[in-house]
Picture 1 (tube, rainbow, N blue to C red):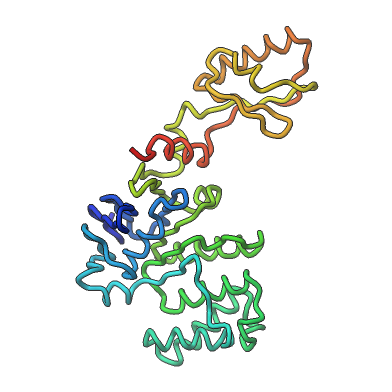
Picture 2: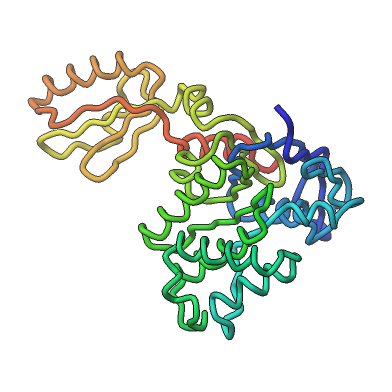
Length: 310
């Protein structure tokens, strides 16, 4: 499969701080690629390099075959970016914001008007098209910013925390829109803290920590390969201390989750048998019992711990 983005040995330092530490990865054409990592891991720096905002100290990056350092204009013409701290022009109307972006990118007048109408209707903003953005809620502004990014029909769309701080309905609309444009052929590079969002949207994800890539794989493969993060979740009819269950054979860790206790193990069957014995010995009743595959969040925490600072 062809690559939309290729990154080779990319590095960026700020004084003594290494923001990006010789990373390499590729994003396939037509996929939604998740870029995950803790705060300060190097996500935003990587996006700024890829989108031509800052220059790397070394390494190369190409977008649809265009070198972002040697052919920055050609690379920028086929991408759109929604940065985390993006904002529309608040003293312009929604319509004026879209017309301005279309004009800046050389979109013909008739085409930009048709595209703007379509996008505003799609995002439920058409009735507010002639209102100043100053009076828009955060969710409305975020929808408008995504409309602005889509005005140019980009081949590659960069999104940095696109649903951060939004209500459930607005976040769902934005996720649905990302899926729809991706199905129409747009490659999406998504940076997010939201593990559930990454799990639902992404074909593959890269996890970055301390400027280094810890892994690149599909969410499902990452979950299935982390067998030590399987767990058994149990609740009893009476209170039980989590650390009391940590003594059970093959249990590597216990956590209290509300009124339930989660026991991490790579041998769920053995743990369930031991729980039955424990229940009988303590004259308890099991209210609920479930075996759980690892979540993407479990995998993320494990990998970022394993690939901590040297």
